[in-house]
Length: 253
Image (cartoon, rainbow, N blue to C red):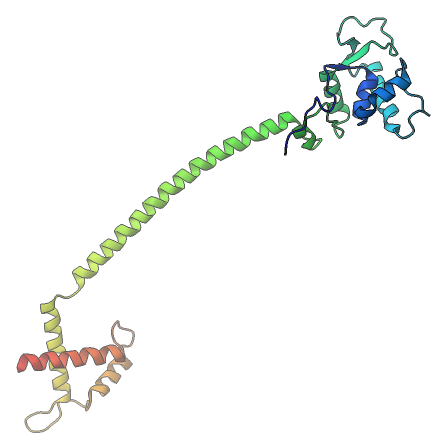
């Protein structure tokens, strides 16, 4: 959205009080009509301009500020010695900067476009430009600190991921180191196959070596007594026993 121009809103270096009141009241497009009606009078009569009651009120506010020393004034835009300059003198003027400062202090809720730009008008009356500047500086400082924290976080996250990879690699190496080799596995399978043959076999005289009559009975007994041990499950034992018996048979054949 394009920013409104203060010149288009009637901004000048200095104003006669009635000119400032006209702009304050939003009546700039009727300025020539109003000035022609007033001629050299500084204030409209109460009965004049009934459609624009704020015109007289705003003019009275400005003259009241001048009379009570709240706003400096001069003659024809110059702040020279004003001794003897009457309030109704047509050459009495107030500077733009003085009028703006006075209005910001005494009427912070009113920000006419000829004095305040779009950003200033959008600000809450309790918030000054100095406050906004301070907030912007603080925001930039917070953004800088946040960037530092993010940098530290990214560094720590990278270190954490590297440690996880190192741990996983060490765990894999340990698992491989602890895993039995082909020779050891053959030995274990031969032992298991031999025990199964004995448990299910009979002596030369026909006497059973154990009370187990089937492989399933051995598996059931092992699961019942050692189900908490790793690998002691019915499915695993069936697979290992079958592999052990085949390995032992191939060795003996």
